[in-house]
Image 1 (spheres, rainbow, N blue to C red):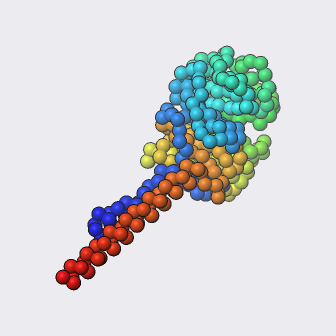
Image 2 (image 1 turned 60 degrees about the horizontal axis):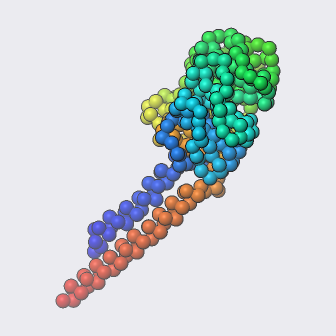
Image 3 (image 1 turned 90 degrees about the horizontal axis):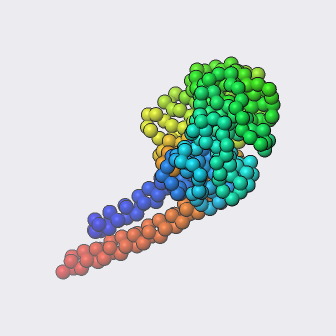
Amino acid sequence: MADPRSVLSILVAMVIPLAVLSTIFESGVVLGGTWTSVSSPTLKDLYDVYAASPTDAWAVGQGGIILRWDGSDWKSISSPTSENLHGVYMLSATDGWAVGRGGAILRWNGIGWENFPSPTTEALREIDFSSPNDGWVVGYNGTILKWDGTSWENSPSPVAENFHDVQALSSTDAWAVGSHGRIIRWDGENWSLVTSPTSESLSGISMSSPNEGWATGARVFLKWDGASWSLASTSSEPVFFYSICMSSTTGGWVVGEDYSTGRGTIYYWDGSSWAKSSSARMILGAVHLASPEDGWAVGADGTILQLVPFGSVPSALFNVLIIDTLVFIFVAIMFWRAWKGSSRASVGSSQR
């Protein structure tokens, strides 16, 4: 008979790879790629992420934290503010912006981040550009700021709601969404209210084109068909979707929070319907793609997830699997040797 301790060892060795896989993968293999957990240099909450390319991405969050991805690791970057940062947008490797509480506006010059003059002290939630000379920031209490290539100026809002997201398609077409289902649109001269099919708070908008787009928030998915917004679907689960990013008309991601579990949730659009893709240990607050198969999601306690294409094995996962395989082989050999020795002892005892 084998030594019970050897049996226990082999069982532990069999469990280790499964535990590691559970840690590395935040569950999620669906069309488009796999979400994997990546080492983060901070435990602070991350509120927004911008994927400029596969080798360059930025994340911002609690206490003015700023992180940068260089293609292999996320690193902390010096920040000139301690205000929470809720939005980040990169025009190029040498020109970028971040916005946050207290009207904070920061600009990246290719070397470092600096404070930039702001016309407001209201909390700023998100930022987007259609070109280097045309950009928008939205925030609380109807705050809308316009960039003209030189400075940020207040722009009149048709309603004093808290706006959570904005997208600029061109200098004459931009959208913003906010609390109570509010949707507003820029026509090149003014912002105006657009009829919304929901009164639920909206936190994210992503337009594939002037004739197709999505907005999401508290359990709802709204679709724009070029003429009006409609309620496309409502999740049966108690979820709040904080961020949406469409990679095309047939692919897109939404991340948020599942109130029933207190965990993060990820949904995927396959061109015909929205469906839950996977879960994350922590609440996810933002998602952004550099391409349909390369992107990032960030959230509570410094959580960072990477979207990688099928067939691409992250180096961290590859290294861990090699180590676990070697451990498994070693323990299996020890088990075999213990079993063999026990068998010989039993034979010798019977012969005596």
